[in-house]
Image 1: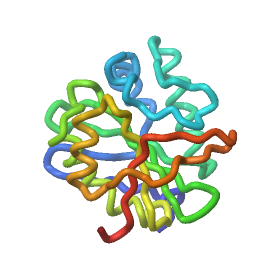
Image 2: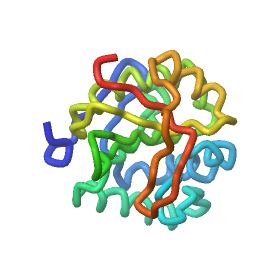
Image 3: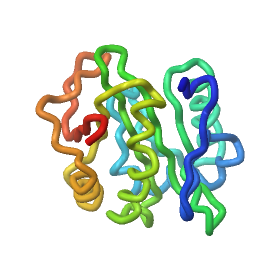
Image 4: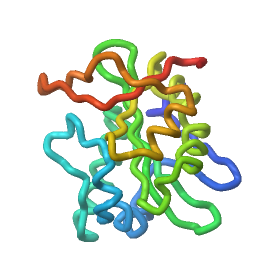
Length: 184
């Protein structure tokens, strides 16, 4: 499956993951202006973007860029919709590294959703299909040491600390990654 030709929706009873769109800007502003949440986001190799968006205009610019990135096959950003609340509470980004057989999963959640059970539920929705969505056999994700609930969830989902740092396009080494092989 080529996720850049048809972006699937993934869902369970609680969450829907679907391609991000302009309709999500108001909800996502609550995520990306939440300093407690932003402190856990992975901005490695993102050209200085710290993902703190404090205005509706800046959030709209970010969503427009994410949609452009999808159209160009750079990465896909999915909105995480809480079905019962009827609003987006975060995003998942998936991309394949240019070198090797590795995919990157970025998970940005509103701070009140940064709980082990929620993260496990989201991983159960996206991790396995991600290998096929972006064509990789190794999936990596970042969890800063302060993200205790995330680290517990990753470990429970068979992610393990990466042996080596991620080397970015800028040549910089980035740490705090966890990895999981397909079929684990």
